[in-house]
Image 1 (cartoon, rainbow, N blue to C red):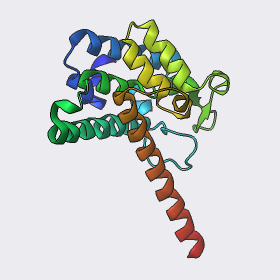
Image 2 (image 1 turned 90 degrees about the vertical axis):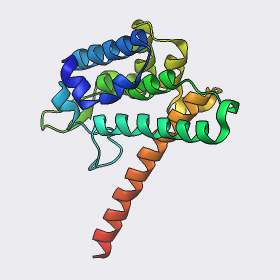
Image 3 (image 1 turned 30 degrees about the vertical axis):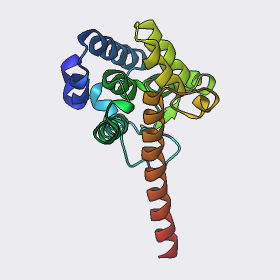
Image 4 (image 1 turned 60 degrees about the vertical axis):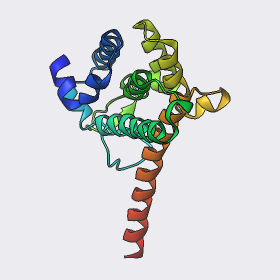
Length: 190
């Protein structure tokens, strides 16, 4: 499973700290096993149930959010230098893990469509993902990124890395949602 996951998400190798890289990978593998997902499933699983049909898979979304935040950090480093210090490893691990709780929140339905689990109706993915990250000994900053990446995080002061993941996540979600709405409007207008 590890090799397949690395092929799907090469960004694991961008984490320079080997211990952090390993813990991030272990959390992913555990979430996949507990949720009953294979790497191939994750290329078909929608990243959200709020856009139907969802034009991006779970893997695509996780990679897009991680790379968007990382590229923003690169721009900040280029323009602001040391005045805006960002921890790239924490940013990458947080990006890769921000939606990991969805592997427990979603499941394949009887008709092949992805549906929300009973657990997912009770515990949203920022919480289940943060618990999973803590279980695997990930740093508090990564747990914070996961827990604060969605609307629940609007109640806390985000770290700079947490803010980048939050904004990258919403850029991905809102852009794809708005594109779907634009298509639906065009179809209605004929």
